[in-house]
Image (cartoon, helix red, strand yellow):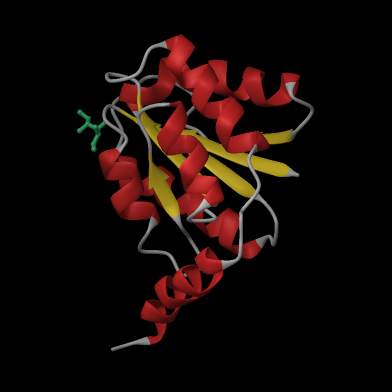
Length: 147
Ligand code: RB5
């Protein structure tokens, strides 16, 4: 499975760590930038990662900004994306199990390296439960088709 990873300047320091964590877990990883910690606008990188994930069935993304909020709000504007803003192991686990999230978002200014590692673990190992959650996720996706 391929992971697309992006950040803004406020998530840049952790982005390298996340890329390594994912590679160590055996995933193919594409770092979609930025390449420096110069100030940038998070919607630009949310869009890059979200469009890549939406275009490639089965791929996933990780987006990091200061809080994770701007990244999740922006990524969820792209059709096909279920970007989950998470702050701990449990929310990252449920994002996969109940919401079939395809992008994990979190904040470098919020979560420390240990929590980030636990979220990456939960997000990359937890399967979607399906069942009663299937119809709910379908209803979320149907919202994209409404005016
Ligand atoms: C940048 O200062 C900050 O606003 C951004 O990283 C993010 O937290 C926005 O949601």
